[in-house]
Length: 233
Ligand SMILES: C[S@@+](CC[C@H](N)C(=O)[O-])C[C@H]1O[C@@H](n2cnc3c(N)ncnc32)[C@H](O)[C@@H]1O
Image 1: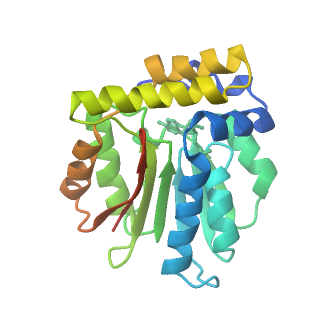
Image 2: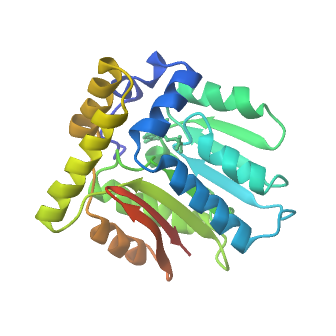
């Protein structure tokens, strides 16, 4: 039994071309570009460009996050995981073979080698996990990282313990969708995702769960509306 609350069919990503999906995800996730800019800044602060790292991208989609990491650390090797073959096809078209390996699987059901990865990234990729599933994934990710200096780059949509803040930030998220959607279909699709498919957990809980999972340094690099970027080591 996995802990994912949706099937790839329910997410409907097979109904998109790569170009359409990428245009829509950049618009429908508030601060998608800013978060990726922050990730790149973090990578440049932490590693030299010639570093040859082992990188795992969970819920990689069409590879937009891997693309940033690969441009910044081109000598690294990548494992990309997604349960939607259509999304992985978008990544395959971008990167081909060579230093990129593709796994079509539900990451919550997948076993991952211990101590193997320098970086595990998951960007807008874990919010379909139940609460128990999120904690289990944080634990699995901590175990997958090299023990000395492995880094989990985690960006996602979150809610808040304080219900007034939770309501306010959800309103801002929906308002962003209304303002930025370029068609009625697009607005209805992403509002539906947000209301019925996404399963957000309070940001404060998730920080706690990261510590419970064994991370000892958990830093919030970006937080606006419901979009957060956390770097955990
Ligand atoms: C919204 S995309 C984000 C991709 C990329 N990081 C970006 O920012 O564009 C999230 C991806 O996670 C995948 N996904 C969600 N739950 C998954 C699971 N349990 N196992 C594998 N992939 C999953 C979806 O199919 C989707 O392609």
